[in-house]
Amino acid sequence: MATRTQARTVPALTAVLAMVLTFSVLVADTPKPLPDPDGKPANMSKPVQVFILLGQSNMLGFGKIGAADKPGSLTHAVQEKGKYPYLVDDAGNWTVRKDVRNARVMGSGTGNMKSFNNEWMTITNGNIGPEIGIGHHVGQVTDAPVLILKSCIGNRSLGWDLLPPGSKQFEQDGMIYAGYKDSPDKWKKGETPKAIGWYAGMQYDGDIANAKRVLAELDSYYPGAKKYEIAGFFWWQGDKDRYNAVHASRYEQNLVQLIEQLRRDFGAPDAKFVCATLGQTVKGAGGAEGQILDAQLAVDGRTGKYRQFKGNVATVYSKPFCHGGASSGHYGGNAETYMDIGEAMGQAMAELLGTKTVSFKKLKPYLDDVTTPAYQALKKKDYVAAYLCLQQLEKQLAEDDGTEVGSEIDENRALVFGVIDGELMGDLSSAVTDVTALKKIDDVYALSLIIPDLQKKYSGIDIYDSAAGDLAQQLKSSETRTDIAAGKKFYRYIENLMKFEAESKQPRDDRTVKSIQKSLARIADKYPDSIYAIAATLAAEELGNSEKSVARPRVYVRSAAAQP
Image 1 (cartoon, rainbow, N blue to C red):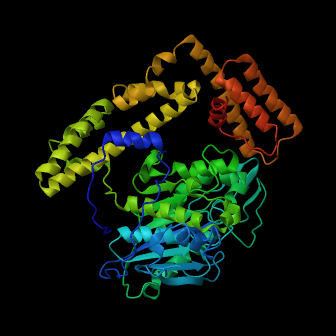
Image 2 (image 1 turned 60 degrees about the vertical axis):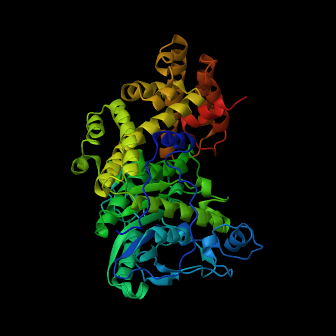
Image 3 (image 1 turned 90 degrees about the vertical axis):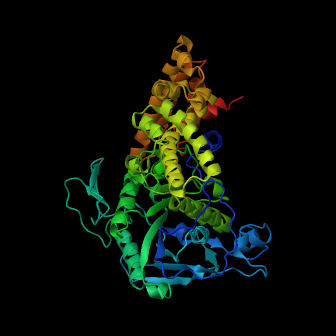
């Protein structure tokens, strides 16, 4: 894909640490300001870069354009608050991008397709979705025609309606749950299922078929276009799955299958994928919402959990961009929520598009005598040596800039630096973040689980040593070992309770509440001086309310640490 050339900058390792200690690696930065669109058409000699938007009703968009005197409307945000200046020209009219087309189609299941939008990217109709922020960001970095193609409908779950091909049946609690194209959604084990007028994945099939129909009629949706490439997918969904404990528990594996299946269905193995979380869900949330959030964060390529997604899948943590309300109520129609999340998604895609996708295993052709030491050190998993080599390589790159080394050599060295830096610093930064956060709340049990391995890998690297201090020795003291034992019991109890509640469809009754409180009280009584005693007391109080979901153990420990 052709992308607008931007000046290369080599990130300083100290800057990386500062970023890590300030923000979570999974939280999108505040979207960068965009210039006004220049009004010029795209270079039509290049294939149209197609970005397909999928999900449910919030992807459709319920952000109100409204009037300037209506807080929460787009017009109010632009005229009264000065936000999104690229959306209006000097005369106060909505700008029009002549290099980005906006198309939206919709159908229920595999029913007839209806077309709702087919115009240059601008503000029309009465509502907006995330496509405005998305379209402007990807249009700015893509030196080719862009088609934003939205194909979705509201009130659809990934665990049933949007279940992708390849998803298998599974058994849980004596019930068989549908795989792709099965009907109904579940039936008792041993019984013959009776099909209904809908099947698992029916909306997936319809949305994909509708998107392909638009692409088959490309010239009707992008005048003058002859060919296209699928550049990426955007996904904003999860509201309906949060009302079904089974669907929520399977969200992660279904999302992984969705990403891989979309690429297969469109013959686009290199297409990028950006997911946004539900705006109201905060990290550490329990229950179904927490499971869905964790699943969406897990597929981000920067986590390392799915190596095939590194550099090509990103997740936007939407909570910082949510201006009130929840997904079920379309965020109260607040246009700033839709714009800010759309901008963050567009920026995340822009960053993925700007990443040269060369894996560590394929770096050899780009190596020279300057970059080989760092490569060899990381290959041997000598992380300390690799870190020191990176520091030397960073100095060399600065010298290359000053002496105007040949552009190909310079680019290759910068590429190698970026790949090795990403391989090493991604894990190292996560380690520093985790250690710092756990030390802050005195969660010695969680620290005891990670410090031994981290010491072997990173001891001797200044930024890790600064974060860890003498933790390795502290964790061996008798006082700390007592606290670790308390933490182990607390964590194990809460995690077992989370698992039980995720599988149970019934609210807690009085007998269950009393049993929970009694078990937590035993932990508090046995370890009265421990942070986990306070956490157990807080958990017991909160879980006395049967409507409260079980949170993750660290949430209670964090609350305990915040107590005066």
